[in-house]
Length: 365
Image (cartoon, rainbow, N blue to C red; front, side, top):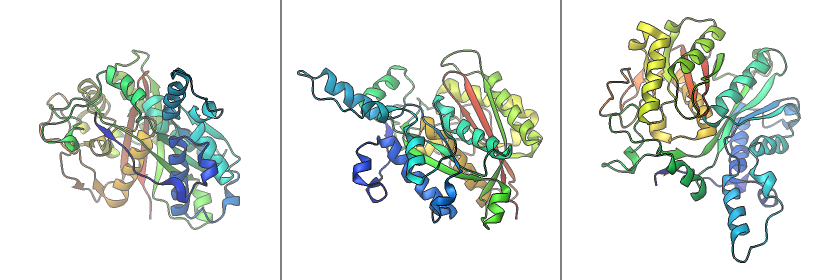
């Protein structure tokens, strides 16, 4: 079974006693939040974070703890159960532990909406700041589903990739005729969001600006994607950003590597952007990092920010035989210089028919 696990050591940042009551997904979130605060310059003054908010996405919570709990319970004879199991498996665990670790007493919110979880978390944090409820928020997602019980469920849905003939590393192939499904990953990404006035007051240099957020529901099918619902999410995000579709220079696609999902998103992009779609660079970074479910959107938003910073569009790895039904400029194999890139869009779509889109702009000098 093809997986994309994270090799990380939380012991340097999380005391041993505290770690005993944290699922893997929460440890990832705390480590990611620590690094985000450190990079932003906010870690040096944790007291100043008290009024901030925590907005996190998480699909399943402590999945490995659920499996361990039932293994103990169903053993013959049954083994002693852990009293901390229930709070450790909650999807809200990552947000709660980030709040406790950094003394954040503002809103601590979790969105559990499968693959759009962290896009919605970032979007709602953006709205809270824009409407004056907060000046600062930690926003992102965390996911750790790589245990045998959870993987068995994904396998039965027939959405996981099989190993490509050239090797496991080439098995995640969005938009490619040889794609066979997604490669499941794990991890956590946390972004620091600030109001313009708060960032300016402390002399911070923003990496990029969130200028639009759109969300929609397909009202269609539990697992089958819908181009109309996805296009609605993109149109709402563009309207929220008050820009025309022609302003977008890059789309970080949700594309997971499933045949139907990639084709439906390609259709939704064409429906949204019309003739501009043919000139619009569109890539899927899941071809490199796999699908992080509740943390996917946050990682892809961060990579989109990086594209805006560097003026370089990320490629779709492993795209050697493009699916003609996708019919987009999917930036195959090699990244592309784009020094004039100003606006980019990051798509996220989920089982259940939830869709979310973020519009980001290059930081102004």
